[in-house]
Image (cartoon, rainbow, N blue to C red):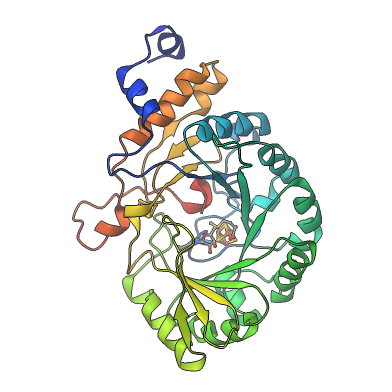
Length: 359
Ligand code: SAM
Ligand code: SF4
Ligand code: SF4
């Protein structure tokens, strides 16, 4: 249907219903929005952008395909009207997007329907964080998550397929702490036989620092990372290892849709978390929408198709139409890939890559 037809049409019944009640078919509300601001990256983590696929010939999006800052603001404000309270900027590597501070500044001014400031967070590999931490904080960034998969240069290089020294990332983390982007969270993807020997060194390093280290099970996102179940280190195993060295106790969840299971060191050394998306799926409480770099709406990390919002936006569709597209997509949402992962016989064959959809 063309935008003109959509604009002329009486609002669809589905749109009206969805607008009044923005919950999906499993009664999950729309609360979080992840926006991928670039599909490019300065690392080549083997579990995300394997070099063999993401080489110089890979068809990265041209600049004209990217949502502009104004388009991001416009769409974000529509998502907020439908219930979004938190926005996370991601990618690819979001600090590679020219003017990332400007996007943060624009989004940080938005308010939820309850009149509260929208919480703006960002996930980064921290390669450029030392130089950007202060300007991001000044722009209104509230929280930052840094991905770091090991403390030795050797392990880090195996995971990120790069020669970036770990010190660069640690300096970025330090800078984030210094400017008050606290508590900094660290994401460590654990792959059996590749970096699982760094679980305890990482725990030791970040204990008593105020930094929250979270261990993430290696996931079968996209179609290029060669995922195998045998490479997944289950969260229970990670927790048992840590508990053996430093006794831990489970903490209460901060909010119902929290994906990380939170634990704390019994001796007061701080908090850790596990994100067990493979062995303990949490689809039942998943309230996340994702906006790809080129403006497509996805309602699951493992989706194979999305709803294009950029084209109608650029063709002058009204806010009512755009909101209807978002709400309609959400209302029909049935996604629960992780809960079905092991049982499914008709698995999607063309899952979207994480660097494009936004991790
Ligand atoms: N480049 C930024 C970074 O690495 O933090 C942001 C984008 S990255 C796609 C977002 C998060 O997804 C990172 O914490 C990364 O470790 C995680 N991730 C990527 N591929 C993954 C996979 N196959 N399994 C689990 N986590 C993954
Ligand atoms: Fe880049 Fe982040 Fe993916 Fe690593 S996980 S390749 S840093 S986008
Ligand atoms: Fe949400 Fe999809 Fe992940 Fe389930 S598999 S938690 S629905 S993103």
